[in-house]
Image (tube, rainbow, N blue to C red):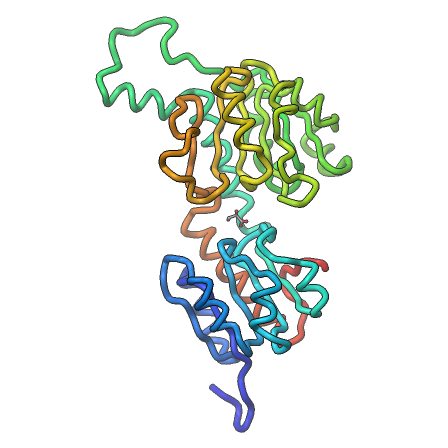
Length: 330
Ligand code: DGY
């Protein structure tokens, strides 16, 4: 309901979002909603048109919110709320200059991402996709002692690149498998968190050298861009497995490809790539020792609804000038 004589703030929602999120926005009655009501991303030209004069923008990780979008929106834009924990798609410097506030969705997806990371690790280390293909295509002959052997987690050293809530949740799930040693690297040691999971801080080089499973959980920043490169892979063990559920651009994909083809490392499991979607003729898809998922780490019904709801609540709080449940400190 519109208060008499008072114009409601306009918001633009860039996609069809899970029901819990849109319900919160609609039932608030506190904003005028326009939405790109499709499962596919809004075309850039449409986005640039629709943001003109809005106060709030509800977006996803697929929309690059840069100077061009901010200019198109104009000075009315006060709040951007992204339905994601990652915010590397937002030009924070430009956003900050304009005094715009930003909401994001940490915590609510931690468990789902941790579960998927463990699933991807097991699928990669125990060669599950390859094995299913063999079973279906007639490759399953007699039982053979050396066929389809992978590597086990029991007694292994697990390395986390970027120790935060998600890394902690992954380790808590892996420990019951009998992991022997947990290492991590980050921009600085995270003493409290590391103590909780008995993880030891090491240099990136040591992480590469010692890990049997190297799991990338860091945010994409200028510091982490391309940090998983030839130098890192060439220091890993030949039986090591590389898993990435953070952002594709943390990895130099050409270097990873070379490391996998040359068997410098045993295998990789990727939930994120550059670009997304990864073209089906991409060389990485041709490798048996590379398991690629289509960015589904947070994809449970409950989690996506929780993300949508949190993003809606962040947006509404920001429009009112209240503290957001989860705000990016700028
Ligand atoms: C995020 O939220 O940033 C994940 O990549 C998708 O859930």
